[in-house]
Image (cartoon, rainbow, N blue to C red; front, top):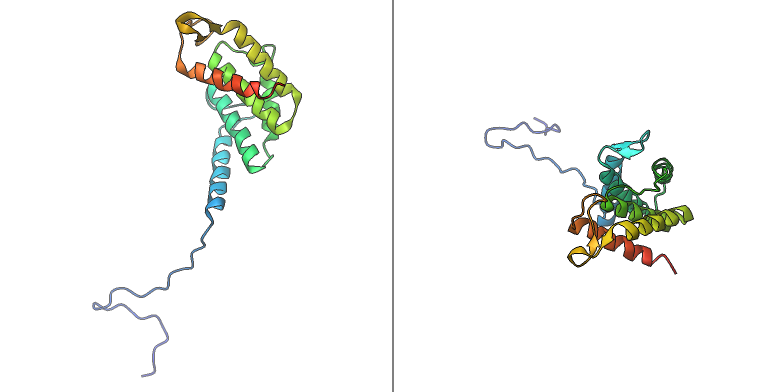
Length: 178
């Protein structure tokens, strides 16, 4: 018999057919990190509701998502989502200029608008951050318990989370004002 050119049939003694492994493409770590970042933003954007415009969450979740989006655009150089920043600003500015009852949310808005200013250099973002800071200085701070900001305009308790955001916001704002 001539030698067989077909794939050998497994026998009880050799139950596994030898298979040459498929070539594996090795992706550099930097590219994997970038791909993950793009995928994370795409997933986050799947929760974005352009008519509102907010992400499917609370206002606090929306401000955190906006901050994440701004960080992504700064670090990646991608500017595909600038329309989201502008729409978020124009729709939510309202008469209160991003000032809510919650001081944590106010600080998050302030941080977001400082990041938007850094990315886009549009003075309206810096002016909104200043407005929020002025309001927080006038209404949030008191000397009870050694000082700090209250949780909300009506809840006169001190909590670490809004105070930490306040410090982060005010430090960032300080670095933006000559």
